[in-house]
Image (cartoon, rainbow, N blue to C red):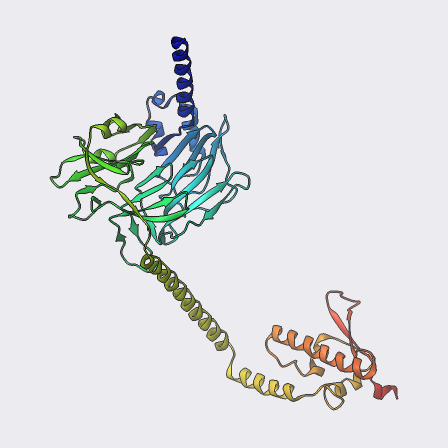
Length: 456
């Protein structure tokens, strides 16, 4: 009985293990221009085939930029740096699911799939860094911006760690070309909490930095020198004794461990591709040399050196973010006002002094003209029963002198309306009626009716 029960437990456990493995995603990052240099495509199997990789020459990408392939239970997707395109492998070719033609906003973005949904996170573009979170809608083929609370402004980092409950960001930079001349570096980081859908601060206790000498570890900020697996984030780091090794962050325990490892950091400047599955990572660099790491094993052998702490964003930091927003809005309004002022000045400069004086005097004359029998109405008596052209009508209305055609058109329409309102109230019918020119229907003629005085 116990033996049968043990066999049952074994197969249940095996099934759960296989199910867990099936739900894992596999990630491949590479530079497309180096695909022809790959001699053995078998290293990517069973996740990615030679046909799939060779077919990537049909997608949009920038020269020497990276392409990310992500494979999970929903399919195989390709994402290209600085592009918003979402490519899915349909068994024959890469199909672009994005229905628009925008680009440039997602340079340096982190593409990932969570709970069956596709996201793009952070990046730089359009003059500033950002930590925007975008979600891709498979039905509409478009991206939408999500708005977590307390989002940091003008902040971006290539050091990100996707955890089950959130996203960790370390050692980023604040930069907005419209405001700051030089980037502002961050020694700590941020954490996006999926549950609260809010940003929080991350403190490493002065553990890591890209530039500061007083930190315990100096890290390389190059994207290939930051290696992420399912449960860990590894940095190529130098301690205060200039020893080289891996500084490994446990996403669940939020603990840092350091293990010495003799590896030239320059190797990561020559990475042609990097494949990650679970906590296993392999990559090719240098002269087609293959490197393989098990970060669960390396972490277990490392020494504990610190711990990350998640903190709420303080109110003064939120006020600082709001001040940045107000500053940006104020600058935009000032620039808009200057542009409008210049446009108005240029328009006025095109009118000569003689025209300006003529317009002013005639406008004054028109403003004093009445619509009654002693005004414009009286001038129509000699044209009763006649068809006037627009030029003849303008002479009667005393607006032929106006130099601006649009101004003249508006003035004509207003005067016709006022004349007809007066005529309708006085004689029961409009004085001026528009008619098509029988010789050229593109133009109008104006029928002048009889006034009360002429009927008598």
